[in-house]
Image 1 (tube, rainbow, N blue to C red):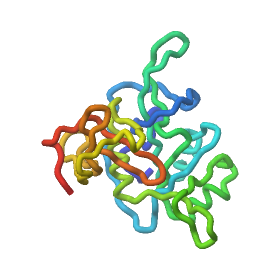
Image 2 (cartoon, rainbow, N blue to C red):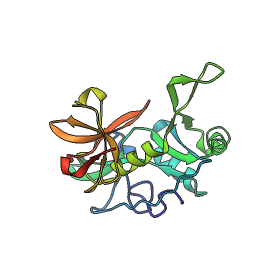
Image 3 (tube, rainbow, N blue to C red):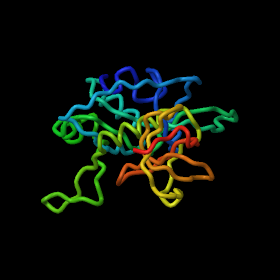
Length: 224
């Protein structure tokens, strides 16, 4: 796989770990060892875009395996959670955004995956509800390259304080755009805000979600 080439874009399963987001679907949960880390090695390709796709019936793991078997780049954000399973407390990994997978490919490749791959009958476009094409219909949602890189960096950190939040939970002082320059979240770009009583960096994927880092001290931030 070429995307984040020395990273597997999913934690758990057959390959080294990687990402975090929270779903309540036990069917997607996987128990994984502690202490996994992530490295980034991704180059922008002007012919590709980050598409947001939806896998119905809680089949994002299956979608990931089928999409990446030919080295197509995909990212499945995950998050650790503690759950009681058969009377025992276990630390498991679950999809952070239920049923959502990100795929970095040319538009024609995405069209093939969604419309011409029988094994992926459960895979659909996630549509941008704020933009319409010439035909008056909503267009497939894509995420800008830089925004996606910040999202991946933020959600790849093994930290239980990374959260998926509602925009109303973010209290901005001045809305400054900042870059994290030290610590686990180094490289993340977003807006600084107070969330759940702590200073954090907010990363927004317009039309989809808002996530926040764990606490970031001011000394670790620079204005962009």
